[in-house]
Length: 224
Image (cartoon, rainbow, N blue to C red; front, side, top):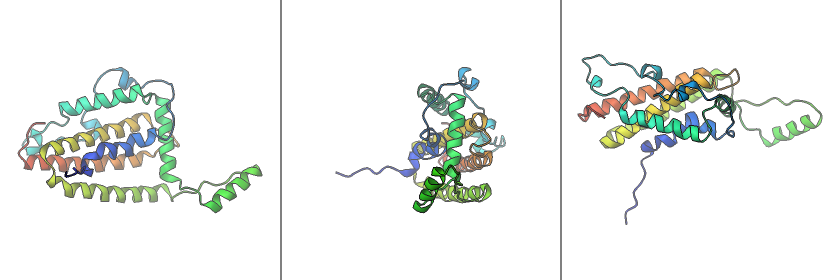
C-alpha cells in the first residue's frame, strides 16, 4: 500500500504558528490574570489593515479575493477560543511568553565549561554573564535570512499545490499574522521579544501570503 506523504507546506500551522505563538507558550506555564479586552469583546480581533494586509487597487485581479475570508475569520475565532480554554490569553502570560521567546532568540546555551564556571561563580555568590548569539541587530539579520530561505522554499512549492491546499496555506498565514499582531499589542515589554523581530516576521508573512493570492488568481479562483 502506498504511504501518503504529508506536504511540509501544509503544516504551516505547526511551523509558523509554533514560531510566533505556540513557541512562546511552551516555554512557561499558564498564569491567571487580566484577559485582554480584545477577547472579551467577542469580536473578530483585527481588520486586514491591522495585520499589514495591503488593499489592492480596485481594478486589480487580487481585489476579487476577500482580504480575510469567512473561513479565516472562523479559524481566528477558533484559535483564540482554544487559547482561552488553555489559559493563554491573560496579559501576564502573554508578556512572560514574550520574555521567554526573547531569551530563546538571543541567549545561546552554555557550553560545558561555561556551565561549570557559572556554578562556581554562583557558589561564590557572584553573577555570571549570559552568553548571547550576538547583538539584537545581528540576530535580527540572521533570523531575517533564515525566514527568507524558509519562505523561498514555500514559494517554490506553491505551483505544485492544489487549490484547496493553497487556500489552507493562506489561512495558516492569516493566523500567523493575527498572532504576530497579538504579540505586538499584548506582549510588548522591555525585556520581551523586540518589536523589530515581530515587524520583520509580519512583513515576510504578508509577502508570502501575497504570493499565495497570486497563485490562486492564476488558477482562476475569485472566492474563498
